[in-house]
Image 1: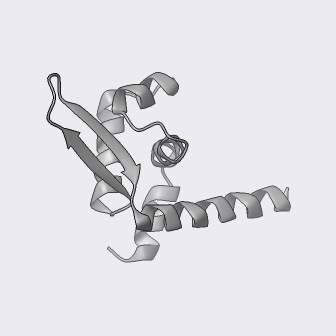
Image 2: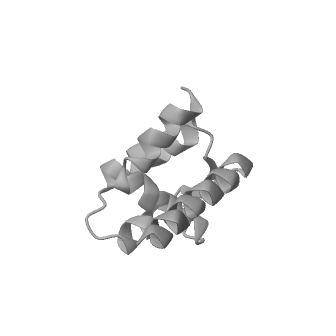
Length: 96
């Protein structure tokens, strides 16, 4: 998918932006993400996390523990992508 299509897909989805914001502020576990955001279901969260991982924006780490533990973090590309989103948000605030 071209970068423009990826940006449109993510920016056009409030849940993707919400999940990115959570990860960028240090919330890395899906259960914690779901508890932080009212209305965010496990199904939607997992879909968004898979999409963000497929785009290379987040990285998934699975820990060999019982019960299994999974954490997400921004990839190097995700950090740069998040910077662009922050700049877009700043432009919107300037515009009023």
